[in-house]
Image (tube, rainbow, N blue to C red; front, side, top):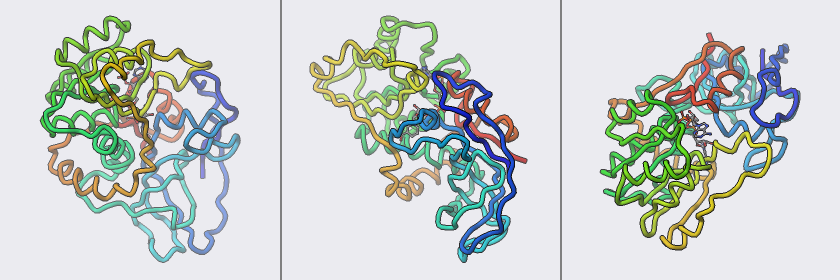
Length: 331
Ligand code: NDP
């Protein structure tokens, strides 16, 4: 098996040479273990938090040990009663080409008529995150005004569509014209945030929704959060899903200077971690998967080929090179 290890904990944006590709021979399968040839590996922004050497809501990566993350692959050997050769499965032993792990840490792929990698994106953790943040945290109501940041990403692009499906007025913020065009094609009012300071963002958000916003689905933080705070309606909800603007910070970042808006608008701001809502995953799947099957829900993928390029794929999340879900495909 070939797998990535982290050489040291980065400060700031990790340099490529921090990720080292190693090779090892796997031991014989133990009872209840399965061996999986990975086909699709997920890179996700939360992995940056695991590279900091401190426990946030998930264990940090250990230095010089195989890294982990979401993966989809094919069982090539099994000594577990629930799995046999050829089964398609999802598990967390990513960042490597061949995984070997206990069968109870592996799950069969659900049986919807979608490409298997969708279970790492729109029908996997990012999709579930969009659904959870809107429904369980932000209390999405029909006809409301909804703002989404990183709106053309894996999480954001489902969030905007779920809000549209609830007949909301949806504004999506993204970092390129191409992303904005995609958002507009889905009926979303799109805004490019690049080159805009807080004041310009505040004005743009107001123009896009003169009645301001009931919900801000927050993926970014920084100036966008400040601009959103100045554009809340009474009893607005901010679901804090992510703050990617800060993941590579080397010191404490300044907070928004206008938190008093929460008071004036009697608004609520609440963070959430999708893993803690996983008991709703089947409900999410039953609701969303049929719409993905019949292409009523759209999703995009940015695919990087080959294990060697996985660190590059990961870093591209921070420059916004991905449209939709960022994935690594293995031969
Ligand atoms: P995305 O597919 O959205 O990829 C990240 C995107 O963020 C980039 O494409 C880029 O798009 C944007 N971005 C990067 N840096 C900045 C910046 N400094 N300012 C503004 N935008 C930036 O990733 P995911 O959909 O996987 O994740 C989206 C967010 O959701 C992340 O913050 C992530 O941490 C969070 N998350 C939280 C979970 C939870 O349980 N709470 C679970 C899963 C994800 P652009 O071109 O628009 O800049």
